[in-house]
Image 1: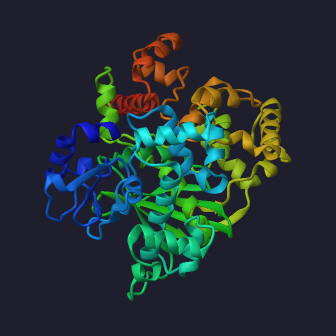
Image 2: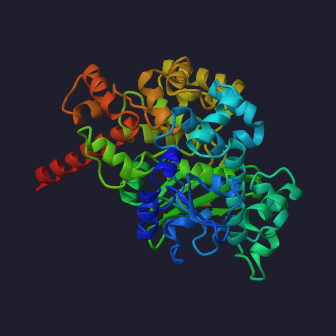
Image 3: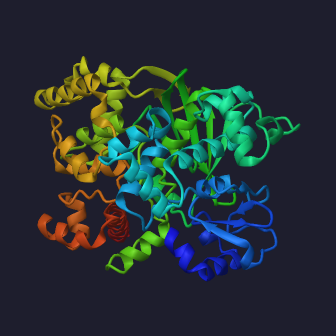
Length: 484
């Protein structure tokens, strides 16, 4: 993308003139005469082409000295995977930056997790994004802080901590450099919202919201998760104790509205990160659907890969669901939570927190209806993860992640691919051994499905969700026809 901006500026300028929302977040436009950078949908008068520069991401524009436009608010642009078309290493690096690795451990550690040197990582970022890993991480913190200043009543010092800054001084310096104003000036004299924290999470339309909710609702863990009245709710353990969140679609259907009750300021960044992963908000559905359609697979408009809130929770739920129906696995998950989860009365239907690895490591899991062999296997898995939580950390590659998961007690290829897809957000994960996938693809053998799926790389996880969705819809049609 970065190279295309330099060699084909006419294409990007045409997108700016059209104000087409499909380009929102794909790139940003810097205006040389004002020192401001904008989204392609900015309502301001379109500048002359000779006066603009194009940037692959907001961080690149800010590093070049441009400030965000106050009308189109670039920090509110959809979370777009700017690594589309870039190297797999840049793609994985950006996911790690989104998880806070660069903030917590530094760029050297980020490069080490990718299996490359820090100098090579910087060269890759310069080539594909026109900026550095440090700039991307700093921009990410600054934009989140800008949202919190508008959406919460937290003091500026708490906003600084919630946004991942190490000190208030660093926070003030970065905000002033990015936005040209101090945090207090950005917030202004108007009183911030009181009560629960409410954030608007942008995405790139279309969004198959009902399909995603149906998938999550069928697999919701009783007592912990709930899908009702067009919204998703769940309990979780934050830095300051038990908390509750609710996610619903905005009235204009161009964003999701996240409401968090009781969230500690320092934990809000993590809450947003997990929510974006859960609802796959960084996907570009049109680009993915176009690619898969050219390879013989048609997806429903706006299809997302349902993620998960917590990788350990997803792993346990997947193990419970091995070789049984979705409904039966949901029943077992509810028993597990009721017996071993910490009580938390968060409203009708939400009664517990999901149990920790340590709690399940010492639990008698046969009490929920598991055979002794399966109970011992799950307990061994939880005991290992309680001692070595790093086993569920991000991996250098999908292949390395699958190998690591398959080395865990009771985890086979199907479970590993499923957890990689939902728990780690791996877009190319694909549980080819799944019976429903094989049926939906035309009653293929596992080997045949694996061979066919090669054409769907690197978006095989979306192919899997598409096949599962089409099979479920076809089965509903058949059931209705039989019933009538």
